Image (cartoon, rainbow, N blue to C red):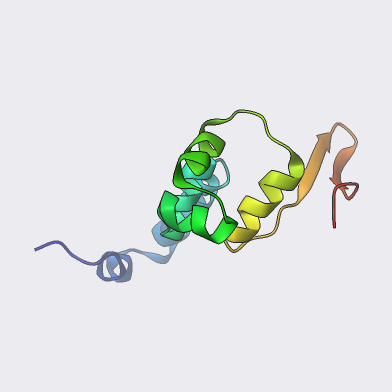
Length: 101
């Protein structure tokens, strides 16, 4: 029988647990919409219903490599999050607020 992850976490040293959580956070910081949807625990059908679109339309959105900021914002909100656009420039990071509601 497989162990629950929490059981394994309790056996890890604090240092190893911190490294593991940092690695997971790093991996999650670079995910496709479909991967985020799966991580949140939604199917394409469920997310499509939340957005008021069909599952085939959701599938097309997930496979796009370009979309309107407003569309991306709607998807992120339907996933339970908020969209923030940050420009990483040599002088530092700047939050772009032009596209906020």
